[in-house]
Image (cartoon, rainbow, N blue to C red; front, side, top):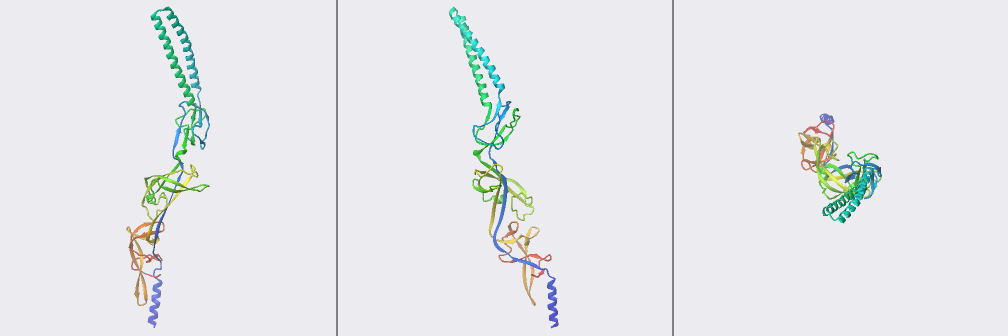
Length: 358
């Protein structure tokens, strides 16, 4: 009896020195990744508008943010130099007309005299005068058209003024006087997301966009293009969402160009895109239970063995194949089974074959 008592007591003391572990049962489920991307809505097409080179600005009729209609005057210019040139050319035309009168009178006198050479010379002089007057009238008309067209800058389409560089009293200095967005082309944005996040998206398909700000409305966008973008480090925070436990893995990125034609969307509004990708019906293992050994993944399982004083539990290393991971779980295709118990935590470092207590 004493021997049995001491044996039980010694086994109890020995069990208290064993590593204490917490276990959990693995189960099947869906592994989900959530990706988030943000961008800013901007007008898809902007046109730079400038007045006649060298003309000073007389009046600026718009400011950045104004909505204008097609044909609306944006800027007027000082055309004094052209106006003065028109007056000078009109003076020249008046002189030509006066000269034409004298030439006509000379022709009439020549015809009365009857000398053929004199008549021929007078006729040519009179016709030449008419050609000079026609040329001068066309020159004046060109200047007049230039004054009418160059005297103001008008909107070629309806849109929103995004930038104004024109200043009263100054001529254009290389920069456009006005930058005008085209409302008919709508708004757009560009987003960078991990390639995995956009595997189900196609050019031309719709995507839900969440607008920030007071309205916080959800609008529809249309994907215009999906292109390769620069890869990023999974830990850099530029992945646009869940990158799991990829460590220092390089994540391939995709750039999405999205068009938006919704009245609730405004230029300059920040937009968020939320995407979810799921791997269906897989064995899920908590990431904290997964260990790495030279690139090989394993978990610690439990192996019960019968003894004279009951069952004893030992550590068993089980290598697994991880096909995907998110921030909390890993999807496993082989190595363990549904409802199998694995070790989550231990009071001491474990090795295969260690006896444990639960």
